[in-house]
Length: 600
Ligand SMILES: Nc1ncnc2c1ncn2[C@@H]1O[C@H](COP(=O)(O)OP(=O)(O)OP(=O)(O)O)[C@@H](O)[C@H]1O
Image 1 (cartoon, rainbow, N blue to C red):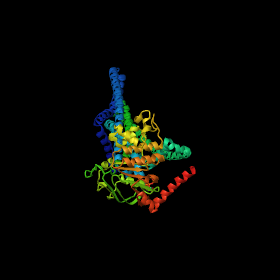
Image 2: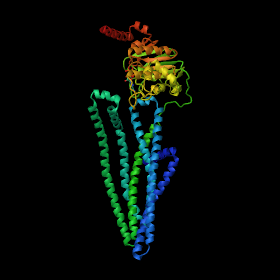
Image 3: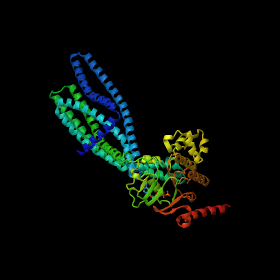
């Protein structure tokens, strides 16, 4: 009973999607299917009339024109049915497009509204993959439901005809079909469970084939000669996936064979019953052909309907996946109580502690920091000490329950994040190298002002990348990267300058940069950091760096270790304190001096 509820709910959901996307499609397609459903009965009736008419003609020598008329009718009905089937195909394709667009768009919009923390959990990616795959199931479900409706009309009309001949024929039909239905339902559920089990493997298989085929990955794969290893690993997973599916199909085939055998036996039983009816003179020869044709027709439709029901059952699990995905908790951006910020005057971080999902230890602990326009802050520390986590929290990527971050005196959780993000420019270590035009690469910093080429050029000039961009074949309209034809590849440092210009182009109060100069040559680094500080006089700048030459220009330096701030202060103050910062600074300075001496 609960299975039936689950199936009905899923079918209702699938139809709801079509109804919302295209009502007129449903009307057209339902009408066609009703007509298609009635065609088999009319064919059976015409066959019966034709045979009886031929028998009469042979007996009396008259009625040839009636035979011809019946034949012509049959021809018209056959052609009409064919035209309707073609029309259905076109309509089904339209529906595929509409549902595909609607579901994928809903999923992507949902992804866009999910809290960033959701993406830290691998289970999310499994669920997303299943939901995307469910799209096809949903389309199939609607198509199958409509064919099911057509089949039901055919079955009801033919069963009505058979009932008129003898009720026993219907009973035999039902007995023959039940086992087939049960087998199909059982395997529908098993197919879904298998797909669920295989999702992480399918994702790994896709990941390995990306490693083997994407240019950025391929460099390392080739040079470390990882090709054979990765292909072996990919084949292992592919085989595991394929073997499991094959096992299920083999098992299902055995059961289907048994079900089919039983069904064929019931067909023979129906035939015997009809022969008895002819012998007792209850039906004519024409009826015999029509009855056998009807039984075969109904059995075919019933077996395809059981497959449809099993597919509904399987599809209902997918619908549940989509529903669960779409019901995930979203970012709190829609609440009307959120306060919009036009300008960031101050950010206070007080006792900020943050733990990633499923992790025992917090990644950062008890951080205190005051940020205001004009202040330049450098964050340094060993790998994994929590620097990036701190700026992710500061950027509002993670929703924090307690008011550990306050913006203009308000907890970040009560600030409209979209308005906050408008006033913050962030550049992460793993920034995006958009394989789009140079104009877009920089313009994305303030997408609403993307047509202000003079400002884009000014942002490019700040990092000195304008000279390079200007000499490209189509200037700022040139494609960057080699992903598309006619793209222009940049060096690592040039990409970083483009990304920095993007951050520059953003009209922000706070600039947050995670190792913004890691790929730059020392000369460019000094120029850019000095330029940044000069032109961002009225902005707060927070930057992470491993190069202590750059940090020496900051007003306040935070030294992090194991998620905590272990030292803080100005460059001179920290140098004279003789702690971690001074040790690191002197080590780096000595290294450069030694290099200089050895060159000298
Ligand atoms: N998504 C995540 N899920 C779980 N743990 C994470 C995640 N991201 C980072 N961590 C852990 O949090 C800690 C701090 O990482 P974080 O990236 O903030 O360090 P970092 O100081 O920026 O390092 P680096 O200098 O190498 O960039 C590390 O121990 C890391 O393993």
